Length: 393
Image (cartoon, rainbow, N blue to C red; front, side):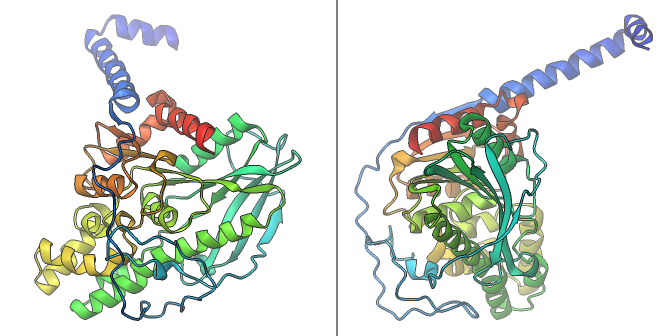
């Protein structure tokens, strides 16, 4: 068969050219995905962030959201600007006892049982997190080595590809070989209920449905992650001073909000995300575009009006407003300069909000940027994450 193929190529110059073009395309994609980027080192803001949280009004949680409890410690410093409100992220701190399914098998490229015990953990969500039975769950790779270890918490891309989080989990497991525990959080479903929000017939319904099925679910997932940290702090084999977070796309947005309000995390990596959720929802394609086009047509809004309504909903939990206590030297950001989902202003807002940390900006679009964590992209992103965690965890 191989001989016949070689004969066909030799006698068909067009086929040979086609194969050469395919090879050239593959090599170009490799170079673009792995090597074409702009590197911004940590650069402190020119002016200190001195704005204060100027809100003396009593806290009113979104409809249906649990009342925050006073015993939960909130950040001691004010947010970057008056739009943020840390009280949205407060919760009642209770002992966490996850339901454990030991010896759980997760489909990864290699077997990690030499250095790790693998179990599946779950407990009830703090509210409606958009997942089945309102359960938050994770795969826990627990080192077999004695003593306290570092912990890397890896967030999912809810309802989407498992490749990015699984790849980073394998990176940590392969390189640390029992020196670091890994909590790989699950997210089988997209936690946003686009169809319910899209059914809104007027402005009041749109605001209420967006709060309930989008903004509140973001909050719930952030609070669930805080409760995972509560659990981690109580484990004899986890060093609570050395816990790091990795998030991708939508979980980069959730993760950066979490990182801004919970100082127990010692470092954070945020990949192909941004801040300013209202801008993202007013720009992105896929479900956001369908929702945007449906609502603006039905209610008679233009894009500017649509975005202004969303701003009022999301400003209190906007990651751009939550970075007052963040140490930018312990943050790493990857984004895409040609991202048609997350606009430049939203990407810049996250970078500024986190204090201008080190950033790699790939010269292509949202999806193509993830190629940089694959062999086709020379594992460029994965290697930078490894170097960062090795230094900052």
